[in-house]
Each structure stands twice: as structure tokens, then as C-alpha cells.
Length: 311
Image (cartoon, rainbow, N blue to C red; front, side, top):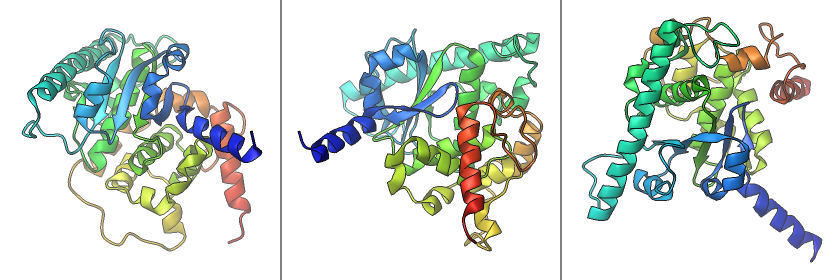
């Protein structure tokens, strides 16, 4: 076999392999669901679908036992009024009922544990109150089909990852059709920023891209201006936007609809998730320590490369 063919096959194979974003979050393409060995080895129990029609997610996940996993999907176009065949309607209804029940029980259980000061993370490290770690009340998470748009979509995504982590029940796989979608990259980048208090959005994007080179087709500006991302991050915490630093400003004011900045600041002030505490133990304002996990070292290297570029 020629080198060219070997390279092509290797590249195609790499497209199918999920990447690890944080200690407990993996991401990749839809066909990662069929990689049972990978799922078992990495203790993946929570599955988050992004940008895939609900009826398709229900079909792909119908053989996954609800007692062993919890599936949530982000589908802004889903509506109960959408015309479905009788078979599709039954499948979607069963899928939503099973996993929504699991999600409700998980959120309620964590809220109860938080009230008594007992969560999986609290046994190791003192944690802020649960409502300070979330943008929304845990009681809001009763449906596994998320139709939110704008800033609220990013808030729900990061809240769910926080709930899954606090449960201590297993790791998370976030997936889209091909693992390279702009919506997926934007959501993952927001999570990197939120869990690394000194990382910029550009560094977060470059970090995600370094993990999965096939994301090359995604351009930074198209990800940065994904609906609601800037509003979400600006409301969640003060952070350094490289576009603003270069004299570029938004074409129009950020939307004032949805969750307000004050709500984000109140909810998450001084309460970065334990990812930040675990992975950035020595970080100071404006810096990321090169010690610690591979994640923080990689982001630090990206920052060093950016600083070395001529201006």
C-alpha cells in the first residue's frame, strides 16, 4: 500500500476517534456511539448530542439502556407540533420520557445532596453552593431535549456538564454529526473558557482545534460570533476578547434577550468549577501555569505561541 493511501486511511480513522477535552469530557462524531469498547474503557455514561435532529438521536440511542446512560440533545428546531410518523412519534416519546426522568432525578438528587453538603466532589474539595455553580436552577433541568438558543443554550450546556461532573457517575461524550461542526466547537470552547478562568476565547478555540485537527474547516470568526456565545461569556465573567484588543468591535450590540449579564455574574461569581481548581492550581490573573495537567500545559503553549507572533 502506498504512503498516500496509508495517510488517507489513517486520517479517516482519526476522524472516528473521540478526543478528550477535560478530565471527564470527550467529544467526537456521531459514530462514536458504536465504539462500545471506548465507551466502557472511559466510563462514559452521559451523552450530549449537538445539532442532530431529535428523531435521529432517538433512533441511534434506542438500544442504549436508560439505566446505564443519560442522553441529552440540543435541537433548537424541535417542536412537539412537528409532523412525525406513528413509529417516530412513539420512539421520540419513549426516548424523551426515559431520559428526561433520569435527568430530573439526577438534578433533584444533586440539589438534595447539596442541601446536606454531600456531593461526589465535596468529599474531596469544599464546593460552592450548587446554585452558585449553575446559571439556572437545577429544577429547570427536567427535559432531555434542549431547544434553547443564544446565551441560554451555552448556559444550559455548561450547567449540564457541571451536573454530570458533580454526580460522579461517569464521564461525558459530546457528539455531533461529524465532530467538526461550528456549534459543537463553540460549545466546547465556551466550556474551556468557563473552566479556565484566565483563558481567552481565542486560546480556547485553538486548544479545541489542536485536539481535533479536522476542525480546520471552522474559522475563528464564525465560531466567535456564534449566536449567543459572546453574550454568554461576557455575562459569565470578564475575559479578554482578542478581537476587541485588535480594535475590532461587534457589528451590532449584543442581544439583551435571554439571560442577563447580572444573572450570570450573580450565579457564578467566585465559583469556577473544580476543573479550574484541579487543572489551574497555580494560575494567576492573566497567566496559565505550565505545570499541572496536559490541558493547562497545552493552553499555556498556545498562549506562548500567540505572544511570539509578530504584531
